[in-house]
Length: 228
Image 1 (cartoon, rainbow, N blue to C red):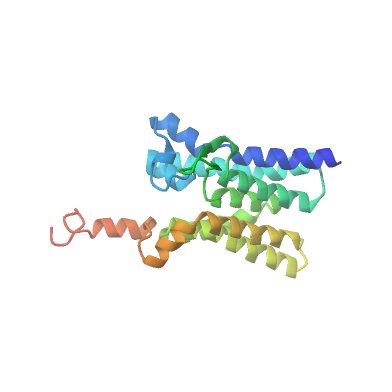
Image 2: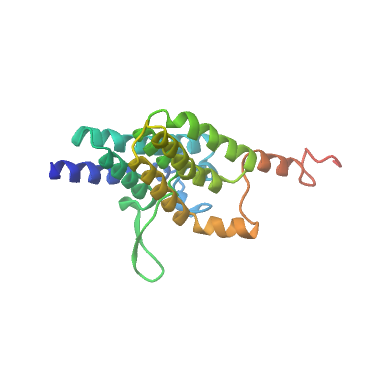
């Protein structure tokens, strides 16, 4: 039993550690996604490095990493909810701090790189309750398009997981431990997005979605400028 638990959790971390964005961008155009934009390996930065298709494919594979964590937990330790929660969290940790992306920092210390965890957090939520995507995905799209910050979209995956699992528990449909998943995953995301939160506070965070589109269209000298 103990061996099965260790295997489930270890494999969940290793699957989460697979750097989808690094691989996809490297295949697409030979670039190292870590040298582009934020330096993260998630879908948003993959889109910056190699276009929208690379970004969507990266995000999709990152979601599947979270889903796979639940499958692994069910395979090795069936019927144990806390193992599924732990495995889903380890998939997010693996995505954010990938064993395959180890490097030395400026001080010569070893550190692990990765993404911010939003897509893998969505996958982990799906692993705990499959219909989660019916709520999390549309909410994420709405935040991305209309609020216009990729960082807030990522944070939304953690925040709305707490709301969804909290409602399910209060209504007698879900397990309280699933709420802990939302809380911890939100903490992981917020920690990873510390630079973005600082830019949001300063008003310098990069805009995306419809805000970025209209900002570009209304920029003086663009084809959408009324004075042109």
